[in-house]
Image 1: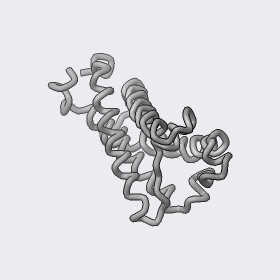
Image 2: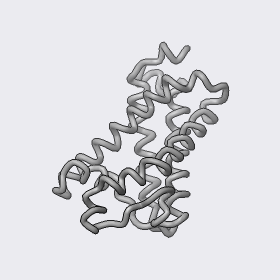
Image 3: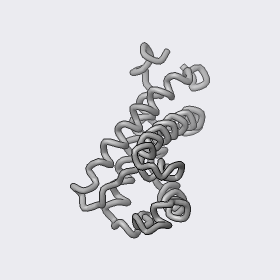
Image 4: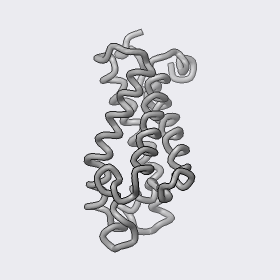
Length: 162
């Protein structure tokens, strides 16, 4: 089956499940010496400062972005000659590099939490949060990529997502 024939629903399910893996791994941050990483709250406060609503909005953003990134993988993956796990791992590392170089610094510039002194800006490569945070993001995004690659490129979801 070619990637053009794989339905959008497959990317949708892979994105949801991959984001769930990513989110669960980030909850282990305090166990590896990182500060607590509440990405839904971080993202949601870019839209509203009501903390309860921000968390809900943030989860919507997190899972929505996860689905869109899975769809991007689905359209990009056929260009790479590797196993599904290899392609997914490469994609996860690419996402990590983009997050570390652009995403976290941009968040620091835009976040009302940072501008009001309620949290420390993560900085490039999560510099202000320590090496363990950057490595945790790497492992989490690596596992996101591997999950998405495996679920999209193998028949696991064939019955569920067509």
